[in-house]
Image (tube, rainbow, N blue to C red; front, side, top):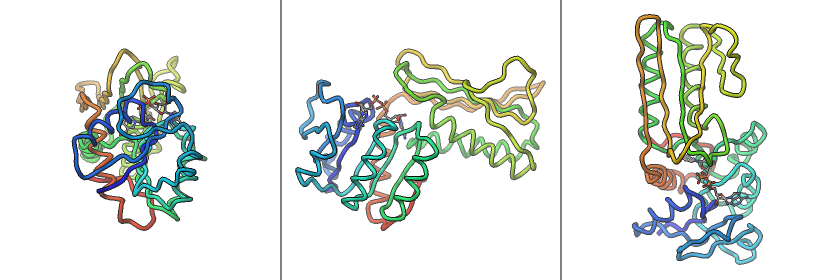
Length: 257
Ligand SMILES: NC(=O)c1ccc[n+]([C@@H]2O[C@H](COP(=O)([O-])OP(=O)(O)OC[C@H]3O[C@@H](n4cnc5c(N)ncnc54)[C@H](O)[C@@H]3O)[C@@H](O)[C@H]2O)c1
């Protein structure tokens, strides 16, 4: 049995992970953490508002899973370092300083951190890298991502992950220096530069997550697309990451597939 502390327990992902785990024998959530404990829940475990309460209760999980919000990172890291607990981190929208803190913490504890834990997105990334590899830098590359209207970060962590991956492949193969433009820094009043990878974000309705990569020339358009129809895919990925990381001593990991 693997005992889990779930940070962000009452959120969309936290709820999906709770529900998925309740159908399995191998894992048990021993406590949850969520700042919004007023939300209704039917969980069989206690949910605390503050990490101090969890420390006071002497709760010691085998692993911590955090799918919450960027501002929760510091206290999650502090707790994991204090209790030497492995961490599976799915939260997106982290800044450079926070990424540095994750790297430093991973010298003491094992951390699995990925902006997207679905198998399909890993395949999409591989296919798109392959297209870059065989296409002699002929394509304009655009990434269009769509998510529900409650999502707080934009572009999505997954879109950034794909953009960086394609940039690094192009730069390496074609000696380019591609620049990633997104909604926030897009210069729309000028014609497109060959070395741009553009990322567009749509926030609407209840979309779980869609990522499309579009490769265009003047004569043809090739699109590779992934649609997430259930959050279960992330819950499954998170538990795969738990199994992967649980016996590691230290280090930062991001690939389970
Ligand atoms: N890595 C992946 O595969 C993947 C997939 C989907 C979403 N995500 C990311 O997971 C995160 C959560 O997504 P969501 O859709 O569940 O969001 P959500 O807003 O529905 O849930 C977040 C939960 O975290 C709680 N929370 C906020 N601050 C907290 C704090 N300081 N301490 C404890 N709990 C806190 C909120 O009250 C909320 O219940 C986001 O960053 C999202 O981008 C990652």
